[in-house]
Image (cartoon, rainbow, N blue to C red):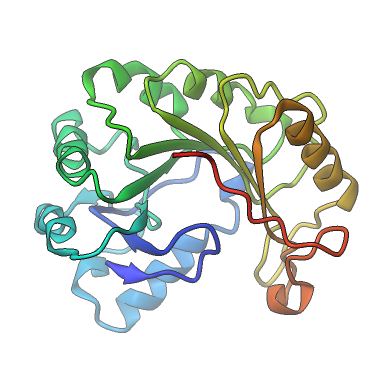
Length: 236
């Protein structure tokens, strides 16, 4: 559990660690870089490195200790629907979220097909927001898998946006986050891609959140789009 600098959440909770790359958006994975750093700092939770995907049962107790309502990004350092995570453990994580309705839990996956395959075995309380990452047109099918789940709030993380998405189907989607890639060798994001997505969200009446332009110095690049900050959140 840690306070987060991610603009669209308040804190992170990682009941699993480790992952593997499955698409172009994974190329410069933030979690992989951060895992390496935390392992070097001697953090016990990350001692096995990024390539070992594992549940952390002791972390399931943590949300019960939070005294005030939180907005929580689940698994910023992993993917809850990775095939190495047993379904029984996913159910344990969902039970924790079910038991703590005062908190909002934001779950994000690239494994949308597995999500669709097991979603009916999970209890979707109102406080669980489910999202999929979509970096370009090659993986837009993830949206259809998400759309068919029983999540009360469904969202898209279009980050790192590395290609245009001119024909998004936003039916039954509640929230869209857009962000450019950051890091040592970031792939550029065309402003026209962002403006087009914003227009699509406006027409579909979907909440739009612009996270960052990215680049080598993401703080210098900032978050302004057309001279404005876009911090819209879905109704919940």
